[in-house]
Image (tube, rainbow, N blue to C red):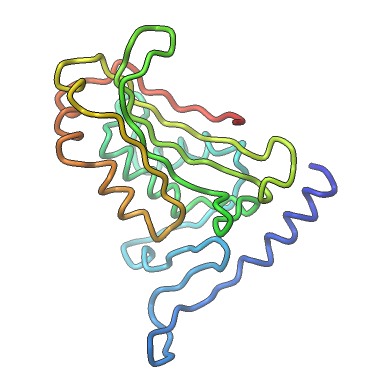
Length: 203
């Protein structure tokens, strides 16, 4: 890391402050967040959760570690399990150099028919995008991408392409609803993916 990157990382740590939400009467509620990273502590009420801090370059390993803890395996992963795992990953693994208040840590869900040089496939993709230090340094943008690839069928051809970005913790429920739309999941559940790919790289 350069001196500028160390300075920006130190600055980002100032945002990691526990800040209780308050109701209209000024009383603290059960919902708490980390300012700048918008950590929703209500999820802790649903069971034990360990919050980890990491670097984007380690995100692929971080996600595999999370799958292992959930007793899930990448080659046999289902789309609903993948969506739930991605949400847990977003809630519990934080990248301090990627500031959520500046869209530095976002989720993307997209699907459609694409040809990447090996023939057409129906892709269902979940992406976590990182922009380190507000984009103020070189090679600051990267993505961890989880992609299910299916053989194209008449049923899957009937599903139009779609994509949607989700910017912060408050939108994870909308992320799940979008990713697990009834018609989409029903069609994918009736097909076995030809490939499930997990990758990380600079953008």
